[in-house]
Length: 144
Image (cartoon, rainbow, N blue to C red; front, side, top):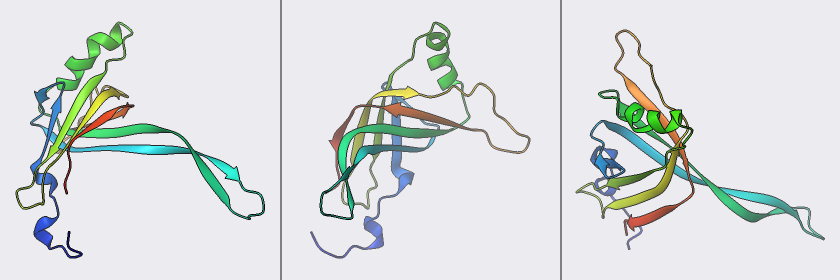
């Protein structure tokens, strides 16, 4: 791989896609998923510094969608009303034809934190933000 890139190789979110439990989400605006590393401080004898010991991780994310349907309300309401925390699979695909490849990542057990029942404002386009947590993921395709 070369030490130089040109602007055409920077991947664009314009080509991002999302599937929720296998259903294509055409109204998606953006997706973010992060893994926070949980660490404990470790004091070291003879040193003024503090190191850290890896103790686990926590997965969090957000899906942003244009409000064009009641997808999330219908997908979650019945389970939540019965006391069940619904778990879903999220498959994100980012495949810009000018980039050096495609990236597909599967979140295996997304647990959404809330259900937006009502959120609108005059003269404002509707958008839903759906934060979630997860514990497992799989790299389907990566960019070299």
